[in-house]
Image (cartoon, rainbow, N blue to C red; front, top):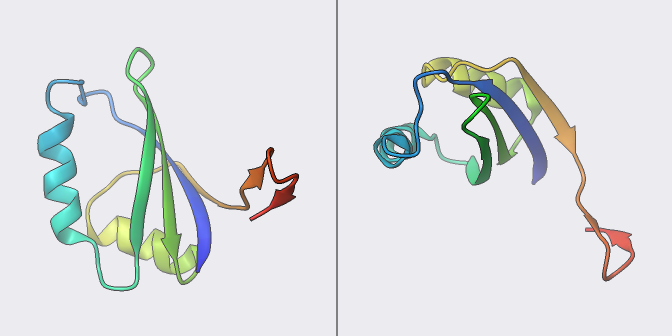
Length: 87
């Protein structure tokens, strides 16, 4: 499955309320999509979420359907430094 990074600016998300937000979004994820992990910069309200999805367009449509605001979705590949290759 293809990998993507979705970039979000979420000024109301704090470390205290992130767990509730995650539970709410997780319930709305459609079949065929996997939210892998998120990197959060709480000071600047920026979040970078790794997803596995059928396509960029499908992920963007799903994020809109979940009312998850985003600035961009990027297709990515992971480079494993120890293995010296993309995985």
